[in-house]
Amino acid sequence: MSRPAHIAIVTVSDRAARGEYEDKGGPGAEDWLRATITSPMDITRRIIPDGREIVADCLRDLADDQGADLILITGGTGPAPRDLTPEAMADVIEKELPGFGEEMRRASLREVPTAILSRQTAGIRGATLMITIPGKPSAIATCLDAVFAAVPYCLDLIGAAHIETDPARIKAFRPKK
Figure 1 (cartoon, rainbow, N blue to C red):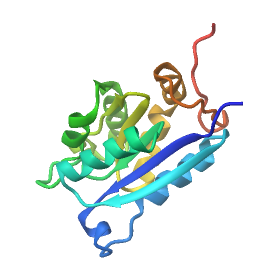
Figure 2: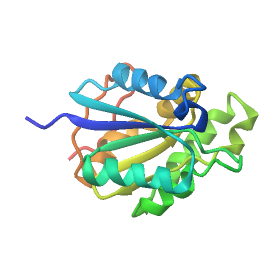
Figure 3: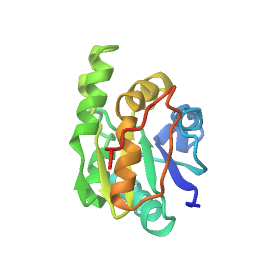
Figure 4: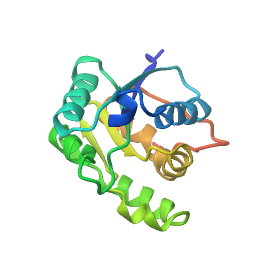
C-alpha cells in the first residue's frame, strides 16, 4: 500500500501572520482538497508573512525537510510591492510548469477581469509539486478545478505520493499504459 500524500498549504499574508486578518485561503484550499482527493493524505498548514526570503525558506523546509508531495501557496501573487510569492518559488524550484498559471488565469478571466493581474505558476523541486493559487476560496476552487486533473499524474512522474480523486469532482488524467 502506498503512503499517504503529504500536502502542505502555505498562506502568505502579512496581516494573517500578525493575526489581524482571518486566513480564508488556507481553509478554503483544505476544504477543496478534502472534497476532491479520495486517497489517504496528511495536510499541514502554515501562515507566514510576505517576503521573498521567508517564503523561499518555508518552501525549502516543506519540500526538503518535511517531505511534502504537493504544496499549495495562497497569496502574494498579485502586482502589489510585497507580492513576491512567484519570485520566492522561482528561487527554489528546479523546473517551472507555466501551463498551470496560464490555465488558472484563463479560467479566472471568465469570472473576473482582474485575473489578468495574477502571476500564478507552478514548479517542481525534487519530488514536490508547488502551485501558487489565489487567496479567495471561490477563486481557489476556480483555479484548482481548472488544473487539478493533471496533478496526480504529475506527482506520479516526479516520484511523489500517489493520489486519487473523486471522478464526480475532478477526473484525474493518467495516460493508458
